[in-house]
Image (cartoon, rainbow, N blue to C red; front, side, top):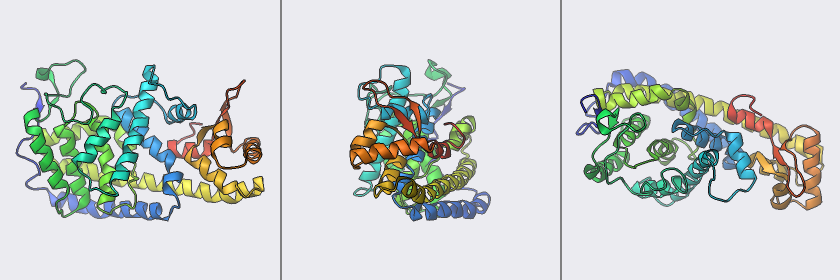
Length: 373
């Protein structure tokens, strides 16, 4: 195992950091997070309006681990109302994304009554692996056997990284949890260390990457840096995947906690700025469409329809008619008007008893960051 990088026993938390290197970054990154939080706090029903960004985060975080599903495929699958077990590799990928969202919803609910802790992590892990790859790998339990990271099928001798041994894992995770709730000169630097240590410990047989990234918005919310656990980190990490993994490895290989923290702080700043831009664009679209919907539909249900469509930007026409709490004739009329005006678009026409699948392209394209629809 001479070529393998092994877990950095005895070096967590780091004994010292290069604050001369970190301090110039701390002000700008905290300011960027604060600006994003200001926008987040100003949005009415943020969980509704930012629903596409939440789905996109689940897509990208899962893609880092090898899934191929797109946001459109996930939302279209969901719109069709499929409830069976996944029956193809594509459906399995989609289920991983849906499980990510469910796990985040569960954690957000739990944070209202519990601090961020190992219990929440166990519960989220169980949800994350439900009915997908890894479902047979002890969901909701720390691993009891060694695991390692490297090319598919490689032996531990040829692994790129070997995490902490299973028998030392419970104590290491306890130390990790204590550090997460300890005081720190800067919470974002602390978060960088929390994330790196979780990934280095690799406490589960599967799902460690997604869980580690899920912890980022949960922690930011718990320490009061953002009003709600809505921070989308994975776009940059997915597009810089190799650098992300290499930077994590330097912690164990070179004890380079400071270098990792520099990378992580820059990621947070970049993503805070991107999140701010997308959130502002979504709010602008919503504020522009409010009078537009009312003027077009001449209906007291216009804003209700708008909110429903923002939360489900790909949907089955029959679901809108049935569950938007709008009288059926009015709901049908609103849908037809929005399609005629080009605001909504059929991406799958209805046929026979099969309802049409409808999308709101302008909102989806903001979330995607390009004209995908």
